[in-house]
Image (cartoon, rainbow over all chains, first blue to last red; front, side, top):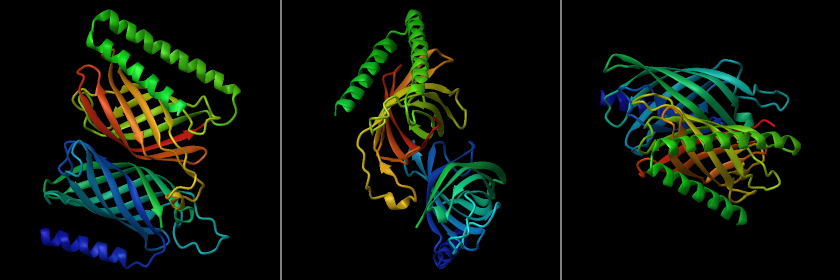
Amino acid sequence: MKKFLFTVCSFILLSSVSLHSSSFAVSLGTFDGLIPNPTILEGSHLHAGIVAGISSSLELEVFVNTSVTPLPFHEFIGGTSLNLALMGPVYGYKSSYEVPPYGNAYIGIGFIGNLTNLGSYGPVIRFTPISVGGPEFVLRERAGTLGLFYDIPSNSVTLFWNIFLLDFYL
Amino acid sequence: MLLQRSTWDTMSSSTAILHSRSRSRKAPVSLRVRKIFVVAVLVLGVLGSVSAKSTGWTVGYRVGVDGFSAPSLSQHEYISLYGVYEPFRNISVNPSIQLGVMFPTVTANSHTALLTLGIGSGVFVFQDHIFDKLFRRDSALIPRVDAYVTYNSAQGNFETAALVIHPLSFYFGDKYVGLLGVQVVRNLATQDWGWGIRLFEISHYLW
């Protein structure tokens, strides 16, 4: 299973690097989930990741969440997500006459795993109801992202959330 | 510098008052503390109404996400919601008064919502800062220092006093965005120290 997880993560990382997309962002935000939770411990968590547009409405996100309090960098949760914009295309605007939507919402499907002990992993469905900005605006702010996570080893379902996410487009 | 000194003096004196009161936790003291809190709320309300005469942004709201490693506070993520009043808009560092509530996103071990009252101010203004190109809009980097006390309305006592240092606080004219602020937390009942991180904070002006 460890080999499988490593292969999946490596594939996703390599594929995101090879996108040659100009719509490439660095993400920073918060992360937490319901307790008791098989994947994370009590505390607040920091979210860091990269986002790359792979089509006009589709983007790939790879991220790492780490604990900040009470024990900084005590655990790491890695994940990836394929996000679909629900209110109009986000990427690929080349004409200055086209105005991309400033507000949007996203739904995504992905995979999350605890990288510290590899004892928890599984698919996740994410929904972001509020998103303002985008690559044309250099910065995007996402708020209230909810993730419904199915943990394969413990056969349980739980909830994750990112209250705020900031995407800095490079 | 005068502004910083007055802010620090105010903070340290108010913290000292709170410390001295929390040591002798008798009923009359608790009643007095409640009265002080009510007076503070009324004063804030009066100041808020005075702001109608001034020009520019003076009143707004602030949302923050905190994490703590401190006695009496939950280890879970906290959300802070404040009303913010900035009485001196002609001062570029924007000193402010804050009144609001903070609560853990996951309620466990009887940790409940706490009322908060605080003051704060920017320290310096950097117009051309190294993060400027990350934003489409013109921005200024204004590192901030905030101080606040939390009040447990269920138990009727002040629980903690905290000092927050925001090295990364970006000002956009009509809003602030703060990242990774460091907090020093003092438990007023047990006199223990703790710490915390304000992971993210956004302030929007309304009026």
